[in-house]
Structure formats: structure tokens, C-alpha cells
Amino acid sequence: MNRLCKILGISLMVAGVVLNEWVIQFLSQGQAKFGEIEKRVFLVTVEIFLVLLGLLIFRYKKVALQNLLLVFCSIFFTFGILEIGLRYAPSNLQQEAPLWIPYEQKMMNAKINEAHNTRSKLNRYGFNDQEYALRKAPGLTRIAVLGDSFIWGVGVEDQVIWTNKLARLLNQNGVKSEILNWGKPGWSTLDEYRFLKSDGTRYDFDLLLVGFVVNDPVMDDSNIKRFIYTGGIIDRLLVQPVSRYLFPNAISLTVDLINGFFDSFFDYGYLKWLNKVYTVENLKQYQALLKEMSEYCHARHIRMLFVMTPENHHSWLQQRFEKIIPLLKNAKIDYLNLYPAVHEELHHIPNRKLWANPGDGHPGDRVTDVYARHTYRYLMDQGYIKPSAQK
Amino acid sequence: MDILKDLWGFMRQRKKYWLLPIILIMLLLGGLIVFSSGSALAPFIYTLF
Image (cartoon, rainbow over all chains, first blue to last red; front, side, top):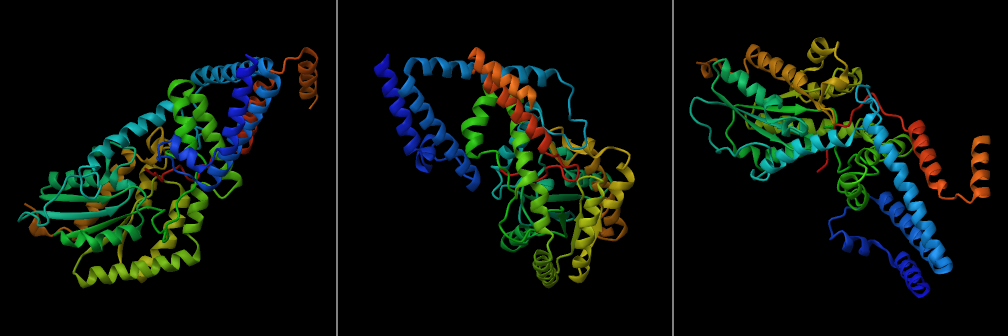
């Protein structure tokens, strides 16, 4: 037993010393993604833990193993009690800003998105839509929509996506039409413009809608930073396996709290990223992009309309939109700001209840309903849909 | 602080160090709840795949 403990102790110490990025990549079969700080914290923690563990086992042998087992049971017991408590505690999901999202809701959201993912793999561009011919059928009004996760449908079923609702409204009201959903999660206006130039203009369409979302003006490759994120090293090696088999809610709570902590005290999180997007410098670049986009469409006789879609009725969204509207006017781009409509119709409903689903803050059914109805009315009233296209 | 001192004294005297992880986890989660502030302004609407 003593000899076995010595070998185990030395092995653990060696593992702690040689553990590096390559070993982690090897263990995770090259699929783990590293965030810089996440990687450093993870590696240092694991290395220290392994060396100390090895030392203890090497020095104290059987006693160390017994104590370690006791500590393990103690941690197991704590998370077990926490899991039971979280399962029966009243939900915090009714709050405007819930501290954490239960595992079940996260999985429900993941399931919806997985279905979209499957469909997107069949589309050559990765859009959550069928493939369309380059030429439209005679007598058909074709609208192309550039967008991001709102158009791709993150968190909602296909029939809830606002452009699909708009297509239904048009067809129900006698306008024979089809809508091409050109949207991908995470796309910015810059990504959308690049697609328009490279592939979009090969298609024949009557109107181009750009579904503008508050985070679309990002002009570089920067992304929102999360400490623990889906597909990251901590998520793959620790969170996913433990959540699946042991303490789903306790782990979900811990992950959300750790991310919340990093969002509060470090340069992490959605709001901090968004603040960078709305700096004067970035908006200057965005203005230049809008001008280029406007000229590009004008030269090709493409009629374009920016549709500004707020995910809920919070006033900060309108404040952000007000920074974009002068840029659109300056670039001579027509726009429809849906914030007033969303606020007017939904202000009596807490924003939290307007989410796509309990695990995702994208716009839900009631919000996309407002988008579709008001856009439809605007298109008809302003003559975007030609009368000849109606039956 | 007195509670923590008492707990530590209890663990030392009775050699019940296995209680330490329970207390540490509880303190950690409690601290995170206090210091993590959920934002009512922006629900997380940026999804990465």
C-alpha cells in the first residue's frame, strides 16, 4: 500500500508539473477552446491542486488518502444538499434579472437551437432557411432580410421568427411573396454587408430589409467575453460532465454566479462589450460603413430599409437606437424604428416575460408579433410593396 | 467573525477538518451571490456557437 501511495504521489506531482496546453488539447481531443484568462486560471489551479495532492499522498500515504476521500465526500454532500435545495426553492426566473438559469431551461434553449443548427447545416450559407433559386418566380415579391440571431431564430421555434410571420402576413393579405432569411447568430452589420456583396446580390429580390439589433454596429472581431462559456475548456472538461450526471442545478448556479462576478469586476460580459461598440471611434467607423452600404445599394438600384428591432421595451434600447438614427439619416438610409411600437404595445408586460424562452433573452413570440405587424403595415403604407404585386 | 472562529476552534479540537470544504463552498457561493449583480438592463442576447 505504501509503495502504491508513493507511486501515485509521484505520478500526480509529475502530472501537475507537465500539465500544459498541449496535454489539455490532447485530453479534449483538440476540441477545447481556450480563453486567455480562463486558460491561465484553469491551468494554474489544476497544476497546484495536482502537485499538492501528490505531495500529501507521497508524505502521508494511507492517512492522506482517507482524508482526501473524506473531503471529497464533504464536497459531494454540500453540492447534493444545494442541488436538492435548488430543485425545491422558488424560482428566481420571475425576476427582471435572474441570478441564474436552471439547467432544465438552459437545455430547453439548447434543444431549440440544436434543431435550427441541424437545418442550417443543409443551407450552403448556414442560414436557418431553405435554399432558394437565384431568380425569383414571375409575379412573386421577394424580400431579402439581412440579420443576426433574431433572423436565424435563436431561442424560438421557426414560426416565431419575425420574418416568417411577416411572410405569412403578406401572403394572407394577397401579396404573393417569399422572404429570404439571411441571418446568422453573432453577425454584425459589417458581416451582413460582406455577405450582400459576395453572394446576396447574385439573387434577384425586390426589397432588402436589414434587421438591426442593438449590438450590430460592432466593427471589429471583438466578441462578448464570458469567463465560463459553452465549448470552453472549463465547460467541456468540468461543467458539462458534472452537470449531466450529478448536480445540474448546483453547477448551473455556480457557473452563472462566477460569470456574474467576472462581469461585475472585470472586463467581461455583454454590457461592457456593448459599451465599447457605442464609443465615438467605433460609431465613426460604423457611419463610414453605412455610407458605403447605401452607395452600394443605390448603384445597384436595391431598395433597402433598416428595421430597428429592440428585444424588449427597456428605455436603454431606445437610447442606443437614438445614437444610430442620425448615422442612418446621414447615410440616406431609410429606417423603421420599432421601439415606439414595442413600448406602446408591451410596456405593461415585464421585460423578463418577453424572452424567447425562460433560458434566453432573445425576443419572444409577443415581441416578434409586433415586429411583423408593424413592418407589414409600414411596407404597405410607404409603398415598398408594389400594388401590382397584389392580387 | 466570531462564528468563523468558533467553527475553526471546533474543527481543530475535534479534528473534523472534513467540514472545511462545506464551509468554504458555502462562503464562496454566498460571496458570489453578494458580489455578482445580475443586470436588469441587458439580458444575454448574444449567442456564440
